[in-house]
Length: 348
Image 1: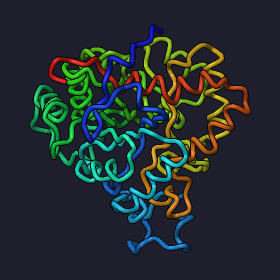
Image 2: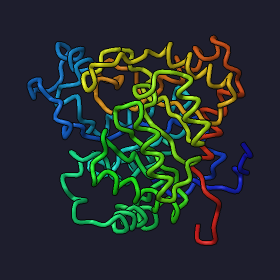
Image 3: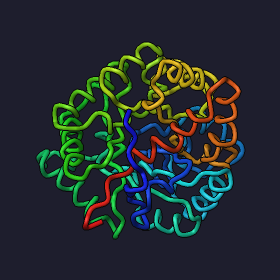
Image 4: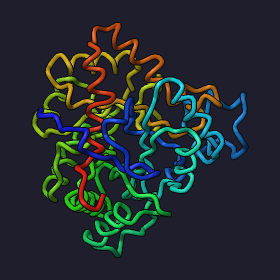
C-alpha cells in the first residue's frame, strides 16, 4: 500500500496531539482501566484475589476482582514496565460502559512518559444497559464525534472503539456499528471492532460498517485469534475487505475458553505461525498484534505477563521463526502510526 508521510500527521493522545512518527512500538488494543463484570461471568467468591485463587481466576475467567482493573498506582507501575521493555505508545481500548477513566489515563501518561491513546464509542449490550434504546444512529454518532472533538474530562478520543458486537448482533449493537461508521467519516479516526464470537461475525460486521460509510482499510478487526482459525479464511477476509486483522491475545496461553467452550484457543506459538504465514502471503499491512490485557491476573503484579510481553518474548520468537526485522517494524510501529494518525489541519 502507499505509505502516508507520517511526519505531516498527528495522533491524539490523552495529553494532546503528538507527531505520528514519534509513536515507536505501539500496541493497539490494551486496557489500563476497565470492568468486565457486566458479562455476568463471575462465579467465584467476591473476596480479593490471593495466591490461592490466581490460577483459577485466570483460567476460569470468573473472579469478580480479577475482572476489574481499577488501581492507578498499579497501572502506572505496569506501564512503566512496558516502557522499560521498549514500549512507547499504548491504546486503551475501553469504550463506554466498560469502565473508561479519561482523567486517570492522563495521570498514567504524565507519570510514565508513554503515549496513551483513548478509545470511545460503545461496547456490547450488557454494558450499554439500555442507554442506546431511545437514541438514533445519528445521535450516537454525534456523541462519538463530540468525544473526539471536545473530549471527555478534556481528553479526546484517538480511536473509535472498541466497538462491541455480539453474535448475532442486537438492534442496539447494529446502531452502534453504523454510528461508528458515521463518526469515522466526520473525524477520520480508525475503528477498532470487537466482533461477535462466530467465524462469520467479522465479515458481517464489516459489511455493516462499509454500508454505513466506513473506510474498511481503517477498520481493525480485534480478536481474530479466537474468531477465525484457518489462515486461508484470514487471508480472504483481509484481501476482500481491506481490513486489518488484529491478533491481540498474545500472552494468553490457555486453550480453555469459558465464554465459548466449543473452540480451542491458540497459544503464542500458533499465533506467530499465523502471522508469519500471512506476511509470507504479502499481507503485512493487514496485521496488528496486541495483548488485550483486561484482567488483574494478566498483570505482572499478579504473576501475569504484563504489557511488555510482546516486546520481551513474542518479537524474539517471530524473529526466530523467520520474520524479517522490516516486517516486524511495519506491524509494531509503521502500521499502528498510520492507523492512529490523521493529517494536520489548521485547527490541530
